[in-house]
Image (tube, rainbow, N blue to C red):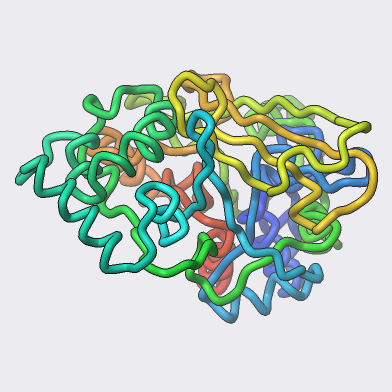
Length: 373
């Protein structure tokens, strides 16, 4: 077969790009190393509940065009992300807002909360933060840092906050209103029935092969007799850009995750909220997700997932690019190789070594598709 595009990966970027090309009459083949489509937004049914297999995915955007686009493929509910944080026996609202400050210091007004934070910052006398700890302390004071930032951040990064660069936390969102909505975006929700259906609809009319990596597919294809090989005009690669180039300059760094999912048939409501963060360093997981609350589920039984950050090494699943100065310089070397490619396009979080929210993935894929001739 001859294809206009071979797309490596059936996550959101690859699926949106494939849909747009298919709408233009192009012939598209997608290969996916996992045994299912949809990448990290894949949801599967357990006990009748849509389970986010690779961590919580909450759609939010300020881009009306992207919001209208994704609503073509699923009906979204009105879920608002309002996580809570557990520190020891204490419970706090996130993001840091007046409910948080009231619980911390028994204050009632924004003026009182601002004064308390300013007092703690002044006591520390940090003028030029040398690391993440000093940066966070200089922005929010000791109480917020010690109870809600330090342990969680150290678990996420696998390093002491004093060993992390200050620029990782450019600002801390301190809100002086009693508003627990985590996002400021006007459009937010969860697709009723999960995310997999969106990708299924995006890929209608496309040829999809799962359970095979792009590298393995191309190797097997090259071994076929001439005349029986698949051909394509352009490759769209959404995997790791350093892997594509055989780690020729060395591997980029990522953080990985491990998920521990439990079905609890005798538990109707495990924690009362979809997302509960655990900010103490001694608790090994960063958060527990109770999936039924994403879709306002009721009835018997629930499913929870504990999320554990992990060091990444080649062969592990990469989730978060480590966008520090060292990796930024290394990525630029790979980006220079990519810029010289005539028929290879790189996209998505791994292909562009950039942290993307879902709406930004869709926007990036739409923009790349629009640029094709």
